[in-house]
Length: 427
Image (cartoon, rainbow, N blue to C red):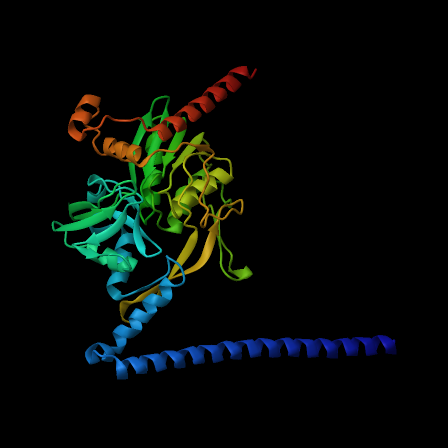
C-alpha cells in the first residue's frame, strides 16, 4: 500500500512538474510572439520616421494616416488575393454588393498576380450586354492603367452614378489589340434567380447568377413554381456564377436535404475551428433527378452548391471544372467605418473534398469555347430573336447550341426513362 501511495505521490509530483513545464513553454511562446510583434512595430516606426525625415516630398511624408493605410493594403495583398484592407468607401461598396444593389457596369472581378481579371459578367447588366467575357483582363479605366492596382481601386474606378459612362480597356486571349468599350453605368439590382422555365419532358430549369441575401427566397419560389407546373427533373445552372454568401448557398441547398444533413463545413487554422452548416429543413426533401451546370466562371458559393449535390449523389454535375475559390473571408470592422476582409478558413464539401485551387470536376465534361459562351449569352439576352436568321442578321453570327445544357437535358431524360421502366416492371 505504501509503495502504491508513494507511486501515486511521485506520479502527481511529476505530472504537476510536466504541467508546469508545459505552461511555462506556452507562456514563453506567448512572450516570444509578443516580443516579435513589438520588434516588428518598432521596425515599422523606424521606417516611417525615416520617410518623414528624409523623403523629398515633405507634404506626402507627413501624411502618416495615408502611409499607414497603404502599408495595410500591402500587408493584406501579400497574404492572398482575397484578403484586403477596406477603406470606408470600399467597405460601403462591399455592403452594397451583399445587398445586391449598386451602380456600375455589372462584372465580378478577381485579382490574379498583378492583374485584375473578370470572373464573370453579371446576368442582365451593361457588362454582359457589352460582350465582356470571363477571363478578360481589365487593362485600363478612363485611360488609366490598372496594372498593379488593388482590386478595390479598380472597382472604385468602374463604379459611378447610374447614367454616366465609363471607358474600359480589356485584354482577351487570342485578340492582339485591347478591346475598348464605352459602357453606360446602371443601378445594378441583381436578381439572383433568373430564367425559370420548363424544358421539354417536364424538366425544370433555373439559373442562379449569384448568392446574396434574397437568393434562397427567390430559389424556393422558383422551385414551388416548377413543381407546381409538374417538373419531374431539375437543372440548376450556376455557370458564370461568381459566388457570394456561404449561408445563402446553404439555404438554397436545404430543400434537397433532410434535417441535420451536412451541407458544407469550414476549417480554420485550429482543429477546433471547424464549423458545420447543416440542413434545417422541416419538410420532406425534394427528390428529383437533378443536374448542375458549371464552368470555369463558377466560383465560391456556386462551387459549394455543386460540390454538395455531387458528393451526396443528388445531382450529376455537367460542364467544365469550376474556378476553385474555396476560402472563407471574415469581415472585421475597424474604426472610422473601415474593415479587414481576412481569409480565416477553407470550406469543404460533405465528403471532405476541398475546392480551394482545385475546383469541382464535372461528372460529365463538356467544354465550350469563349465564343460559344458569348453566343449562348447573347441568345439568353435576346429571347425575342428566336429565329436563327434574325439573330444572325442582328449580331453577325449564327446561333449555336448550348451543348452543356443539351447534355444535362439528355442525361435527365435518360434517368426519367429508366424510372418509368422500373415503375412499369413493378408488379
